[in-house]
Image: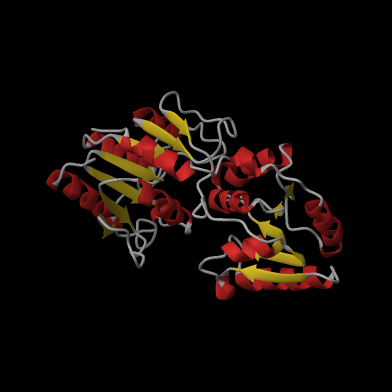
Length: 325
């Protein structure tokens, strides 16, 4: 199997969550490169290399031609952290053979690793990815890994696209029991905690007979599986991990896509609405709209099998293992 490199972007928890779902199915040694701190309880045969940040400090990287005139997404001039993080990756590749390198996600790391002679598996995201930098990263990759079911999104990748289905950390868990009537669970990603707490309090006041709870921020739940199963309705953003978890739990859901680059979550929300998998709202509903919105969600009979969660992490690992430099 040899050595697999894996770059994890530091924005949010989704890239790490996806890695942790796939890693148990991937044989051999894995070295992870990320600006995130190493999580506790790393899987066996997994090494974590901490990278410097490339989005802070002086000079302001946002004002240092980070796109190289539109050719790239993020390569700020004169930024020491950016230089050091790439140097660490180069030093590792020079010192040990890597058979493949998963990049989730960075156009610059994907191109840099390929220039160093290592075959890449580039994780793609939903939304409009037809810009030049994305196309170049996909064209240079041996595989383009899509964590969604076949046909859910258009991709500009011309070759090597593997649509594995939604990758959930809960794939394979048993669903037991029935939801508790009147319970509403809000998955708290993407919104400031104080604002979300206020919104939820007002929504609860507008829906007598319901019991609202939040999984996020100061009410973080490390393993929300039981909470997902018990909730009559789940409120979530349209991130890839959140949707895969909803699918794994068979949840009736209200999905509110959050503003993201390339309209990532808007694209996912469109698929969910078109296939009646969730009630999709363009923004957080007004207080007096919640009774109708919750009734619409309760009436759903979502066929979450369409999202392809069962076996997705295993299929992703297989697609990665097939690549060899």
